[in-house]
Length: 279
Image 1 (cartoon, rainbow, N blue to C red):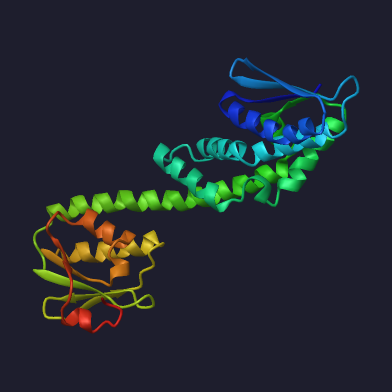
Image 2: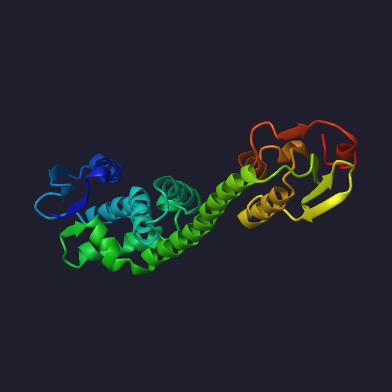
């Protein structure tokens, strides 16, 4: 009688997966029963499939249910634990954001390229004579290649997020410093010059001051632009942007850097008409 143990929080999902896999066997006249109990912080599923002699179709059905759980709620739980262990200094909201991002980017359930291999590993475990499967321990000790893949994904996203949060912190410090500086230029214009050229910064008379490449996904480029503008300490920053750029991360960053009222958005002027991308 195979027994499957999951964390208590994942019990309902495992129960649902077992039901989905065993229901077709019930329709074929195979006796199936799953007794669910709680032991401490674990959910325990005692599975009986067949009569006196276990039905050979039972083990593959259980293996599919367990494999689907590992690559579903189990995968998200494991990602959260890996993040907490490997990137403990990231704020909780940052870790939640990473888990959500990875949940979208990493295929889960039967769509995962690991699905067949994990299901086969569970099936072999039961067929090898083991009747107790503690899912989290099984993943940790028998699915090393799968765990290593998640570790690599967590480290990649953790490093990316760490850089993002570092730049956000530097941006806040830069904003505090800007508030202490004496006034600089009266007005500067930030003109979107296209994806290849980025942003051109002009003075009030239209003379070029700075031109910087800008990729909305690159926090370093956003900070470089903020740093150059902070050095100019303008009293007004006029943004000349196409519709697609008006809600981007670098525009939001400038809104955080400069006090309220010093960012102005232009909706049509000679600077804008020079750019064919402008609306």
